Amino acid sequence: MQRQTTTSPLLSLPGAVPAEGPDEGVAAHYGDLFREQRALADGKGFVDLSHRGVVAVTGQDRLAWLHLLLTQHVSDLPPGQATEALILSAHGHIEHALYLVDDGTTTWMHVEPGTQGELIAYLESMKFFYQVDVSDRTGEYAVVHLPAGSIAAVPGDWPVREVAYGRDVFVPRGELEDLAGQVGTPVGVLALEALRIEAHRPRVGLETDHRTIPHELGWLDTAVHLDKGCYRGQETVARVHNLGRPPRRLVFLHLDGSEVKLPGHGTPVRLAADGPDGRPVGTVTSSARHWELGPIALAVIKRNTPVDAALLADGTAASQETVVEP
Image (tube, rainbow, N blue to C red; front, side, top):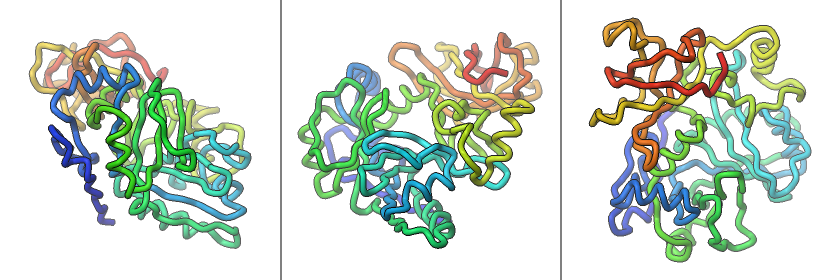
């Protein structure tokens, strides 16, 4: 299915450099990547995420219905409480990550750019006799991220997801440019990505491939409720959790700062002891230059790779920190 790109009007702000890849349509940065990272870390500025898909579910059965489809326990989700959830394939592989909040009448969620059509098609196919309505609100609402500690005010009737690392605000698109003039300095998505990598938060389409299961990325801790009832893929989740271990695991990499080029998504990861021609044990999934830590990355590697092994990412020396236990 072809994915449409939403282009932000905030790309006209001074210094805006367009992002590429999955974040096409918004600014990668506004001229000073490290300053922008420091601003976010200090609770200042905002990040334009208006390229992300926005989906809304209404109807009296919405939470009970979503509870049957998602990995998360949402049947009793209180208004205003943020959560995240996954949609899995029948074999337990990750298809979508949903970042949700319910306002008492509507469940709002944002998803990876351009994937809302695929998500809605699946949700529509599962409606059956439930009193729910699913709609694509991407054309009406844009997501703006305010970092933890931000004192920026937003109108009380706008949906807001508040989590430990900040607030995701669902802004009426017609108000986006006005809001940008009120909430501080714009920050590009590269700065937010650097902080995401530092925090070990996985992202669908980067840390995942067609066979990724939640256990490999640490999503059991934040997006999967292990004691809820049946949902598609639940048998795989339960079996691996109770009887086995996932074949791969997420790790955080500190990269050699003397290298000019960052290893990109899909770069092979090898054991340093085997040299640059050794058999790959995994791949880099995301990388960034961090304002304090220097070059960093996330990688998914084979579970049995020793936790203290020195690694190579396309020839760049890398030391690993365990994110998911082997």
